[in-house]
Amino acid sequence: MKKYFLLLAGMLSLALNTPAASAKDFDDNYRFIFYAVLEGCYEDGIATTNVDQILLVNTNVGYVHFVYACPICTPTIHALAAYRSRPKQFAGLKTHMTTFGPGLSEEQIKKLYSNRPADRLEVINGLMQTWISRRMTELRLTDAEKTQLKQNLEKMRKQGMSMLKNFQNGDPERFKISAFAEVQQCAVCNGACSLKLKPEGK
Image (cartoon, rainbow, N blue to C red):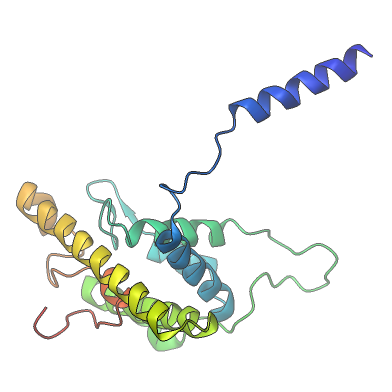
């Protein structure tokens, strides 16, 4: 009986100390991007080592290929991290595969591991374009819903670019060694808005 009460007390303590998900933290835009990236990784069969490269961290600048506090980069990072921590094997299956697609092409892999940051960002930009577009199609959004979503993403992109500009102006020495010094564009934000890495007139 004592063990039962201890177990019950532990469960109640866990429940009371676990905060409920906040719509402010995980709104519809966040979830759309998160699921688009997570599903994209599974459908394309991205290798974990390649995800590690996309999530490359430098002690001086943090995530090399992402803009700090960017509203599009943040759910993208979270989705990639969630995919990377997937089970090593699916229970009950003989196969050791834990993802569905063939993985990146040789050309994509070559660029992803290039010494030129622009090459790496180009791959990430292309992946984002594909993943966001794919989820829009699969959700079968109405024209009005699609227009609203695109407007939301563009607004978030502008916020991300503002964050990038703040980084450039606030810490120019660190910015010079970041992946963005050459292109001065957020590959993830542009990809989410169906824009190339360096779109004309942007």
